[in-house]
Amino acid sequence: MPLARRVKEETGMAVMAVGLITEFEQAESIVGTGDADLISLARALLYNPRWPWHAAAHFGATVSAPNQYLRSEPRQHAGLFKQAG
Image 1 (cartoon, one colour):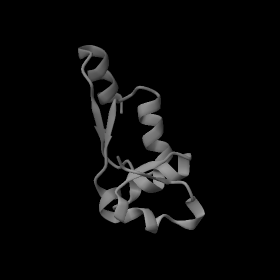
Image 2 (spheres, rainbow, N blue to C red):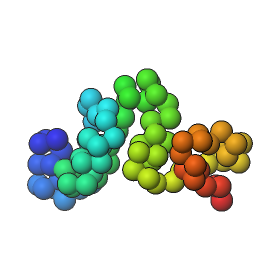
Image 3 (tube, rainbow, N blue to C red):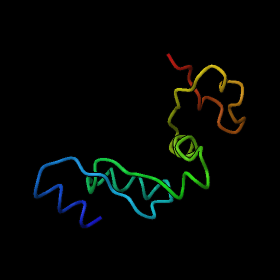
């Protein structure tokens, strides 16, 4: 993250952080502290394609989901999905 932070400070451009970002808190911290404006996930999404949904559930957020997904909302995360529209 030091390189992303430095590029952002020096140029004022939006920057994306990438590389071994696997944990929800890690991703949130990178964006929350302003070290980067965006994160890019690779290995984490290959392992778990629904990583963003799991992160939303972890932080108590909601996911705008297409109608066909609404019936698959996990019981333990009732209210996670909201109808896309």
